[in-house]
Image (cartoon, rainbow, N blue to C red; front, top):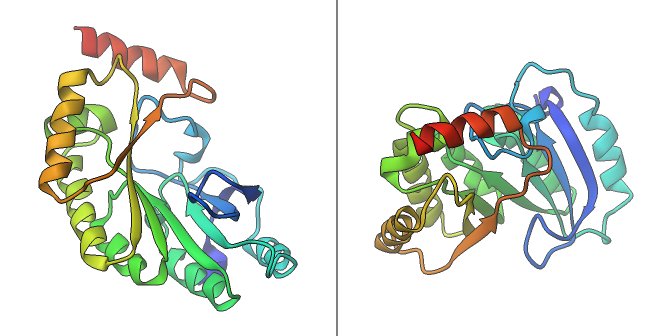
Length: 213
């Protein structure tokens, strides 16, 4: 089942995907949300052609035992793929620590994956009242904050982060998000600055027009 994993990108050496760790990162294909500032829009379509085979990546990782601290599963949205957990298990069996990036659109799938991870970076997009506007998906806040509760209950190391484009989320909205996270027990919240590279500019421009309107 792990061989069913659809991999849209692979970074063999990364210092930025897991704080303080040297890792390889798999970018998994597919995401159910349509965030206007997404810098990996090529990963959104779950059915897009992919150029990477898991077997090749596992062979590469065999040569990096003792050199890499871990392997991170990013996206897209990794929990969209049911082959995620078997692949996490396979990588951990090789002796690597396992990191996970998620925005939490599938709370129960995330809950099932957490016992196989050593760390998670959870993207919380906005305060609850603004969530659907940010993701382009109804009821996304409910799913994201349920996923946050699963992360906190899991006991694993985590980082909660939010990408901020000042045209899409103003300071009062960011303050509301900080209050919501603090109420959930989150003391440290990382703000990630919007990066224009790779962004679908038409989707971003449409979102900015909607926000202004």
